[in-house]
Image (tube, rainbow, N blue to C red; front, side):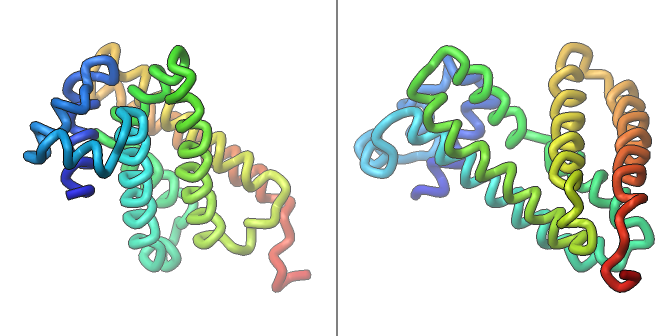
Amino acid sequence: MRQRLLDATIDCLVEYGYAGTTTTKVADRAGVTRGAQVHHFPTKSDLVVSAIRYLAAKRTELAFGELDRLRESADPIGDALDLLWEIHQGPVFSATVELWVAARTDPELRRHMSVAEPVATSSLVEFGKALLPDYAEHPEFLHAVYTAMDVVRGILIASWATRDRRELDARWARARRHLRLLIDGLMAGHVHPADA
């Protein structure tokens, strides 16, 4: 039942936005009673933040499911950038942005998001460390991962104004090329432990 409520919450956030998402709409979409919804999630902010945590965990699971394939890749950094782009597509990201924007003026939601967001982001950092352990201790590694996430998120948010898929793909191709240059440049001075 919890999973149905969480999936319904994401659907409502995408369809109605944060302001239009109500616990009644979520319970109806999930096919559960309002009492059952309140039992699992007492407030709207508990419900929506739990939904984002749930889907962030699913996104992390998807990334780690690709770990072996990417470790065997001829271009693990390029493929990791593409995976970062792919896992930010779709309703999970749209719902997350709804919450980021709503948290600006909703102190209770902001308090919840200030806990949930670092957990979601750190899971992607852990994936990067698992994929590229030789670079994980580089002082710029975390900055490179955060910059890549910021670029992906910024492009996707800006794309909602036009919804032109060709333009979106072209912007990602350009950004990916520059992120690759940044990451290669940052890591160029890093000595592989086996060479030390």
